[in-house]
Image (cartoon, rainbow, N blue to C red):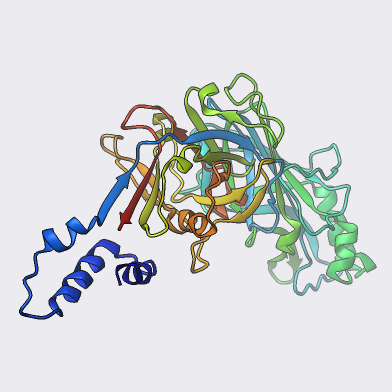
Length: 440
């Protein structure tokens, strides 16, 4: 009867409380003439709750070959030198479409063409330093399904627009860049005479492949996020009648699938300098007992449980809970913490196999506890109960079965969020796997 009750309770999350209530109810339903002593009839029947959290975990840092950065609706532009992750450079490619309608009359005149990029509020680095960005016209069409942080698309060597500005992502709403008048006048004339190039969005994109916004790499101040959905090119024109009327035409950002961020990094001089190929791992003992996570460029932490097999589970044991806790290093407080982390199953080549899910098919996402005052009790917590139970049900615990820790989508594809994880052997800093199970 005990085993039957234990297996039913595997479906519940309030294991200990429910178990206690159910057992008390079970015994209370026995013959009222029989004496019932919980200590004698329950504990002496060799049922016990066991807690284990003493074995070591193995952490390493892995570099995923490439990250999909298209269709994220976020533009990233800038350059920043991070003492832990090295020099990171981001530039963004995009297409524009035609205005929904236009009517340029013979006496209308062209005034200017600008690129308008609305802030997304995201930033990485120091927004108090001046930044320069340049706009270039693409010489190659954007026409494939997916683009990655490593993708290359050719563009002409001459800048057609430049802006020096102080980023104000939480104060200002847009950055507006004046585009070369020669290009603006050319588009204006084609619209005026309704040439084939402006007869449809498809023809227009055969004429203007798109643009790329590129940072000045000599200014390592920050990487700024912009909203691609509301990005547009604006053409200012004038109509002279009794008064001068300003008419503005909006060329919207076209398909989000043809916008992507190229993100490169140079880790020379950091502990991650030798992190080149995906198949290689930097064990935390070689990186000052730390492991690393950074979105956008594919730096992830791999965690393995090499001593999990040393716990001798009996077939009648009931896993009550398995909690993985990881703690950030003090350097992580220099920026914003990721709000949560995700887990992915992996293999010996460090390929991303599948996102880790619980038995209900929900993604295993961490909770986050921030100790902003003392920095002693900040941690991410994962529920790995189903992960361990699945292996027990299969009758085999694989010590080499690793998990990748990273920032969850969409931030993994659209930001440079970073985290440094402690693997210090000190009792307050080490990662911990807390297992609680019932033995009958």
